Length: 424
Image 1 (cartoon, rainbow, N blue to C red):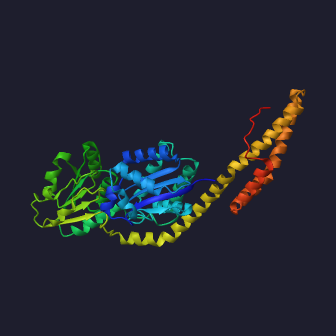
Image 2 (image 1 turned 60 degrees about the vertical axis):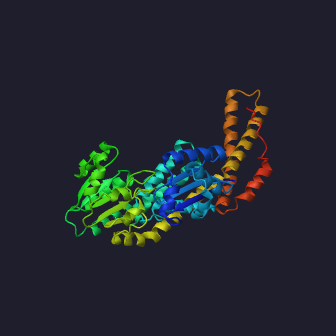
Image 3 (image 1 turned 180 degrees about the vertical axis):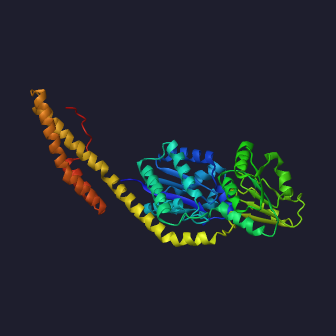
């Protein structure tokens, strides 16, 4: 029997951003936990997904390892009281529920801004990380490629991915609304990770804004600023630029807050200053809101203004869910056949061993021509003998009745015995 597929999930639905940022895993942590899961539990099908909205571990094992996995996260993150965070995790120990959850996450049904297209690339990177460590077996390979194919169907057959309604687009819509009465608002974008770069691309929707871009790697900031016609400044000049900006969007990756209350207190704020924190862990101290004139938004309280796009996406949900169920049914058909595959192979090997032994017994003095003829005839006979049991076994599998037939075949042909490996 195959191991059950399971999942451990902490997301924006179960935990606020102050908890998610504590649990969030970077690439090095993901690599470390994958290796530990492989070494400690001999798990071969594992996927770790960590974004600003979720940290999830999917794995195949006959035991529920959710508590052990959460403790591993605690060790990796240096959280001595990780047990206190257990209630923030959702655990999926039902095979189909875990698979269905991964489909929904991958399609964007579970995203904070529904249909967020960034999640697709994030899932692909998580899969690549597992594959690089040989932690994706036939089960996970098949599952992920089924998900990728399903994603293509969703794009082609529904309006679920139409328009732009990602978290970054929602942030730009928010900026547009809050600066509507400001002439040529000055917008500073700090950090050009995946979300930061997406914000830059979406700033074209605010043509009146004067946009400045900065990043730790100047060459990256220069290239994207040149592409979109924005100003670029060295990272060390960010503080001065923050003083002058009306809007500061921070998506910088840092374990400690990059923008502090003490820093903001040095700004001369004439009317208002909008701070948008798209980082997890957060890069702006929440206490900056105490500074007069400061408005702070983070990934949890940004509300999407792309109402028309979202309405279309919401209307498409039933069709997306139907496509997902069709894909899951197809995957389960494959999974069921995989369950009987070892028995089929044992059955073939048992018949082949009988054939080979009888060939050796009766053809000792036969010519090469005679041996070739008998070889051809006996192999053809064996294939015909195999055909009906294999077809019936696969059919029983689809009816969820394979266990009894596996047991009968195993008893009839003693399939559990060790093969003699005797060569003809």
